[in-house]
Amino acid sequence: KKMTLSLWTLSFCGTPQFYVVKERKNWTEAQKYCREKYTDLATIENQEGMNAVKSALNGASGWFWIGLRLNPKSWIWSDGSNSSYEDWSPGEPNMPVGDNCAHLWNGYKWGDGACSQLDPFICYEVSALVLIKEKKTWWEALRYCRENHVDLVSVHTEEIQRWVETVARNASTDNVWVGLRHTCAQGFWFWVSGSTICYQNWAPGNGTGVEDCSNGERSGAVQSGSKQWISLLENQTLNFICTESDGETRTSVISCCKDLDLRSHTEPVLNPDCFFSEF
Picture 1 (cartoon, rainbow, N blue to C red):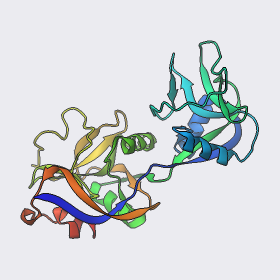
Picture 2 (cartoon, one colour; picture 1 turned 90 degrees about the vertical axis):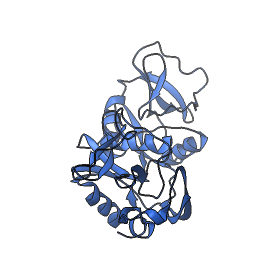
Picture 3 (cartoon, rainbow, N blue to C red; picture 1 turned 120 degrees about the vertical axis):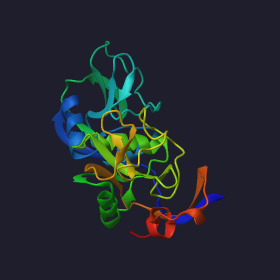
Picture 4 (cartoon, rainbow, N blue to C red; picture 1 turned 30 degrees about the vertical axis):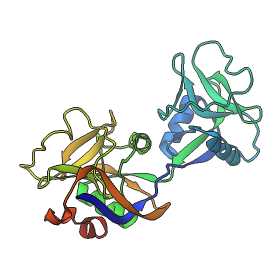
């Protein structure tokens, strides 16, 4: 039968918050600062995001770096976003091909300039996710997230994957725990939010075959390098990513990938009343 679970899950929208930093730095220094203090230099994906940036600037004048850089012949966002949204000032970009970056000017339209130029800049932060730089086992990470935030992050979509990649970049461990869990008894992977795996981003040789359960249960992590998912023994100690409590909704999560009979589940981790609602 199709698995349908009614549980509390995060209503994740990945809405960034923008912050104006008045210190004058070149583009690379500004990027480093934003990644250390926030998430990254500002990525502007649509008119709504542009309006949020204008609101953060609150009428301030001057030039302000955003996270867009010419690399080498196309414009690339600092956080890897592939957004096609543009808001260039008429005639821009117009610099000769070189090390050029984008800033806001002239009514907050975009212009290009040498990346070595010293300007104030705009950072953004993803308020829905938080990287915990403590080293914990998967179960310890799950408990920490549920006691201090909402849950270990479940990566249901490519959009959430991109936010996870951005946040995981600042991890102090090579891999980062997410809310991905394997059950040896039933032989499949699922998210702690209550759904099985639909969107996938497994590293080669991980997650798609029979798992070796001889040494215990396995859980999923994101590689800080490739940002793909890997299968690890649950007792390894890693950094981890929690979801923040910026919005919860009561929802029905319907499995789109697996036909399951919950009556046959004998492990506590597969009992929604035990695993998903209580800890």
